[in-house]
Amino acid sequence: MIDWNRINELRDEIGPEDFAEVAEMFVSEVDSSIDTLRESPNFTTLAEDLHFLKGSALNLGFAELSTLCQNGETEARSGHPEDVDLSKIVRVYESSREEFLSSALVKGAA
Image (cartoon, rainbow, N blue to C red; front, side, top):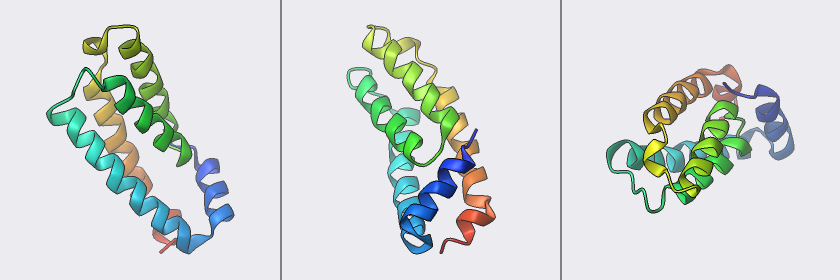
């Protein structure tokens, strides 16, 4: 679900204090995007919305979420945004977020 090697690399590259800031910003931005997908998805911009989420997820090691967003982006770009399983994307984000935020690695970054 989460690529902990990527998280360790990022933390080592930018340092614990900056990592905590990046993690907080990531969660805040992605929470907002996920809320939109959950409550009022816009099928006209779904491919772009999923592209944003994919990149954010990939940067912070949310591997499964990134893959789901990539698949959804491809589906939306092929003209079938209504076929994207948004509820699965939301569920995977929520469980990944919980695992990420409960990690000693993340808690120790602040």
